[in-house]
Length: 401
Image 1 (cartoon, one colour):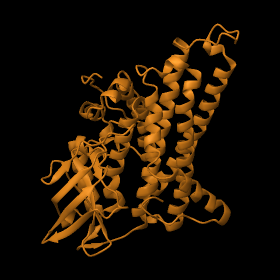
Image 2 (cartoon, rainbow, N blue to C red):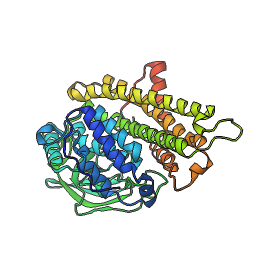
Image 3 (cartoon, rainbow, N blue to C red):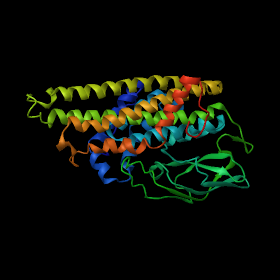
Image 4 (cartoon, rainbow, N blue to C red):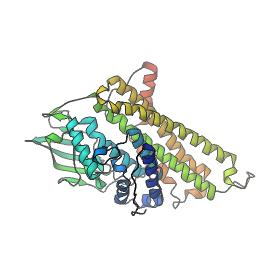
């Protein structure tokens, strides 16, 4: 991958920003399989995202950001994931953590944080897993002290800042704060060795007395948390991130496989066709998988617009509107999971035995999807939809719903 890519113009519209993401993806695609195999820390890839302006896509224009919305961000994630699922995930997680101050914090907090993050083009990582009470937060005068460990810390080894999460000592209250990734006491371990999403740097982290001022505890005023329903939009927002990079990976798999079929696959000797592209079963499989992908993409885009209406007026979000959005996101997540797993598996039916060569790298698409779709059981997403259909039951906000 060339690290010398430079852009001399700044996109002005959503369509131009999506095109910019596609240009960055084209750079990533040149050696995606080789980089996946090497598994090196993706410093150059994050630099590319910064050079393309994608890191500040959601940032306010008055501070040098693009001022774009979530539907555009999701599309950008999808474009990047077509070329490299790991980097698509990193970008999507970055957008969520960049937005965390808006979701959880006070107006003063998010305005201050977004301004600095945009001006400095910070790349965000996150050491967050509220399911486990594995980080304790204690008070020391006007500071908070985070101590513990997290099994996963996606992107933090290539980040400028990291979102920390822990439980306030003696309470059940979770505290979120953004700290420099180079903070004393933060140790990111090189122990991410999974079959897929190999470049996401999702290894563990040790948090040894990392300090943050109380004023940086997102959503706290006078050491008391001020809850809003909008706080709970974090889950559907990131679940849509997941769905979009699944769909991007699926699209990349189909595009890569189609190129292979056109240029390398051989027709079957009993089929009576000179070209693999004339084989009826090959045409059928590509048509079937593409139709399913397009339908899932259309659903994802529609639900992203529904979510943007909630982001546009956060104080108006109610438990009912939030719950209805979560059901729709659950449907997208379920469809995207199924479509991506099917597409990345079935491409081998229409490329042939030689396509399984390690040098082709076609396996990376399935490995990437299979790895991340285990993040939370898709059966529970289908259950959310089913319960709404049968009983008009909206999901209660949790860390996964």
